[in-house]
Length: 229
Image (cartoon, rainbow, N blue to C red; front, top):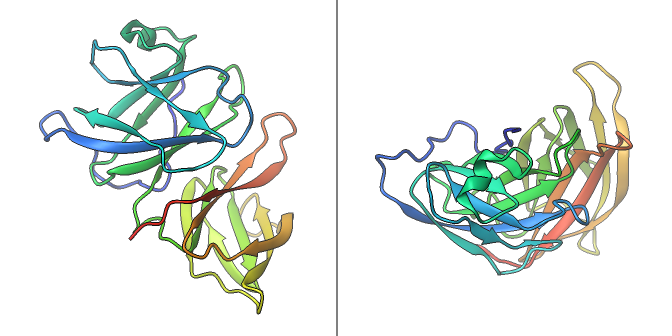
């Protein structure tokens, strides 16, 4: 079973059994159709209760799933049965929810090899992902550079980088170009260009990933209608 990445929340203390239980609001999206190809259920490590069904959408709205966490370690499977956590064919992997996270976005992307999909947890708090911002979720180990109106924003590999109050032109949009490089000292390779309208009071998640089939680096945006204080 492949362990899933936890992006952008490294260094935070994870919930332990000795800590008080808490509710966490989770929204789940996929950036590719039919990835994952089946229903998804969330199981808490060590629990014998059926898993909680998770609605995975192609967009972000206000609908979320409330998880009453007794532990910060979660297992994702394609069946509600608690026995599915021990069936490698039904497991999508594991994630850890840091103790400071009370709202999260679970982002599913295609996986390499035999795995149907992998999931990545984004901190959905106003501090990590404020209204009026872009959040670049870089799911590659490479450095990505996003240029907005001639201003550079460097995004480290396997991390989330907020771009708050992005620079815009007189039409409240940013001329955008995105680049990556394999390692320090390499030439920058352009992967995308276009115009990014300012999010206004909304938020936009920009996912950088390598397509498991074509191996090309791609940039996919998802607008979030939720405003956060």
